[in-house]
Image 1 (cartoon, rainbow, N blue to C red):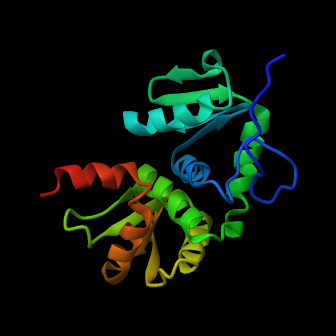
Image 2: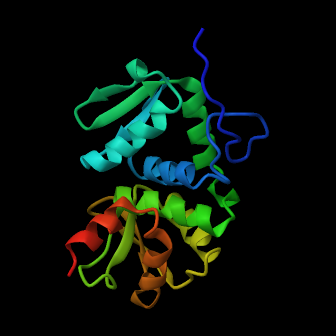
Length: 194
C-alpha cells in the first residue's frame, strides 16, 4: 500500500488532507497557479502551461505527494490521477474568500499572475490577470482588498470571452512588490530588466 504525505488542511475543511492552502505559501502559490491554468477531468488533476519552469514547479509539488511514476506528462500538461487531490483543489477554488494571511494571499496571487497575468515592461501600466468567468475575477478583486489593493476594475472582453482584473497603475507597484517574492515570472523579468 502506498502512503501519501498529509500536508494539512484544505480551505474550508477540518480533516487532514494533502495541502494546506491557508498557511503554506508554497501550497497557496500552487493553488493560484492551478486556478489560472487548471487541467482536470474525471479523477485527474494537473496543470496546462507552456512555461517549463511553471510545469516543473507543479511537478515538484506533486512529487512530494505521489511516487514519481504516477505523475504523467502529455504535451504541455502535467497531471496525476487522484480524486482526493482533485476534490481538495476544487473545494479550495470554491472557498478562496477564506484566504486571510497577507503572505498567503500574496503567494496565491503570484501563482495566478504567473499563470494568467501580465504587466507592461515599465512594470506599472496594464497590470492584469485574465479569467474565464466574471465570478472568479470578482472574488479575486475582493481578496485583493485584504492586502490593501483597492483600486481595481474588472472588464469583460466579449470577443475574447474573457474577463480581466486590472490593477491601477497607482497600486500596481504595491501589488507586484507583494507577489514578487513568490512569482517565477517577476523574478525572470528582474533578471532581464536593466
